[in-house]
Length: 262
Ligand SMILES: Nc1ncnc2c1ncn2[C@@H]1O[C@H](COP(=O)(O)OP(=O)(O)OP(=O)(O)O)[C@@H](O)[C@H]1O
Ligand SMILES: [Mg+2]
Image (cartoon, rainbow, N blue to C red; front, side, top):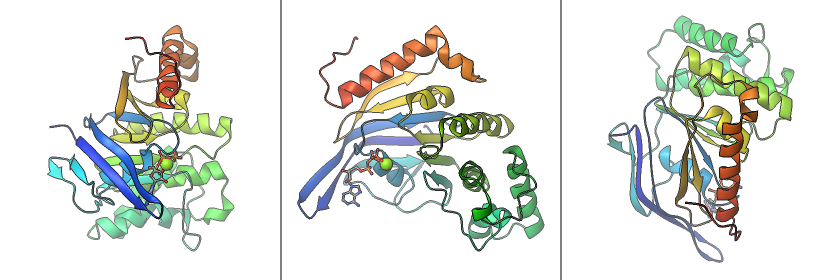
C-alpha cells in the first residue's frame, strides 16, 4: 500500500447559504519518499485535501489512509507549513523549531532536541540566528525556520500549503533550492500545494492537477527530470513542454474551453 492513499473521497461543506460540494470522488496515492505537488483553481479544495490527510477533517464519503492506517483523527506524524510561517514571537528561532519535538516526542532529551533543530537550521543557512526572535528575521528566513519546524520530528509526510506564495520571486527560487538541499540530506515525503506551475515542476516528482470544484484528480503529470535540478532546467524543452501541459490542464479545470490532447 502507498504511504498516503485517498479512495473516492467526497466532501460537502454546510454553509449559511446551502451545501457546497468541495471534493468529488477524489482518489490519489503518494509513495514513501515521493514529492507530490497539487495544483488547481482557487477554491477547488486543495487546503481541504491537506486537512483530510492531517486528520483535521473527516470526509463524508471515501477513505483516507496514512501508513496503512485509516485516518480518523489528527495526526502528529504529519508536519505542516503554510503561507504564513506562524512562529511564536516569545520563543527564539531554535525553540520555535524544537516545538514539535516537545509536543510529539517528550522522551527525547533536550540536548538531542536542540542538536536536531540546530542541524536543520544550519542546512537552511540559519546558523547564527538560533537565538533571534521571529521579528528579527526576514520573511524568507522565517519561512526557512518554519520548514525546519515542519521537518524536525521526522514526520511521515510534510504538507506544504503554498509556503512560498507570499515571498518575492528571488527569495522563492532560493527556497526551492533549499528544499532540494533538505531532501538530499534527509529524504522525506511531501505534499506541496502551489499556484506556481514552475515551482511544481522544479520541486515535484509528480504533479496532480485538481479539477474545478467539486474536485477530483483531473490529470497526473510525472515530472521527467533528474532528481537534482537547477533553475536552468526549467528552460529546457522538456520542462517547457510539461509547463505547457499543466497550463492547459489548469485552463480546462477553470472551465476554459481549451481542449485537452489525449
Ligand atoms: N470550514 C468550511 N466551511 C465551509 N466552507 C468551507 C470551509 N472550508 C473551506 N470551505 C469552502 O470550500 C472550498 C474549498 O476551500 P479550500 O480552502 O480547500 O480551497 P483551496 O483550493 O485551498 O483554495 P485557494 O487556492 O484559494 O487556497 C471553498 O469554496 C471554501 O469557501
Ligand atoms: Mg488553500
